[in-house]
Image (tube, rainbow, N blue to C red; front, side, top):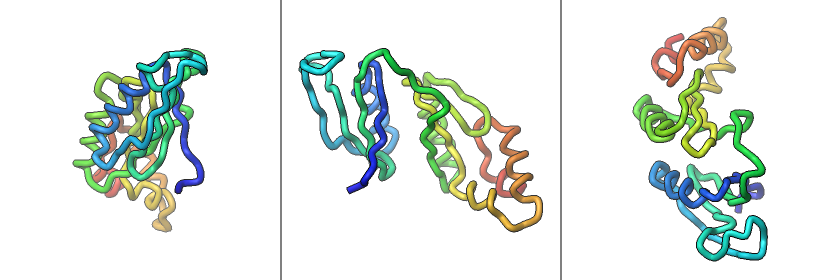
Length: 154
């Protein structure tokens, strides 16, 4: 079992969000849902207080905690993609109803920030090839959705 679990605080729409993510991440699965009318925000037996789920091999807990906290780009989920087709797939699905940002970042319609990046990105940034890290960063800084080939060839 994964020792740490990422908790995502939603304002009553956690189940809608998790169902949406399960459509996108084909290996995703919901492990459990907890309902209560005792703990705030007391949503009753119709809306789960928590949903434990997994996507891309990482466990999460979605909490319907109410309006007290909002997501921000200060925390994001990075999706490493092997091909441009994967980048295009995750970008088009996760940006739907959300907001595209620069450098491969987007915010989905639920407010969660994502980075959709080539899997080799970290390798390029740590390359021993003279100038490669700076060229990759310069190329990335000119993009919204990332172009794997342009970054690879930078």
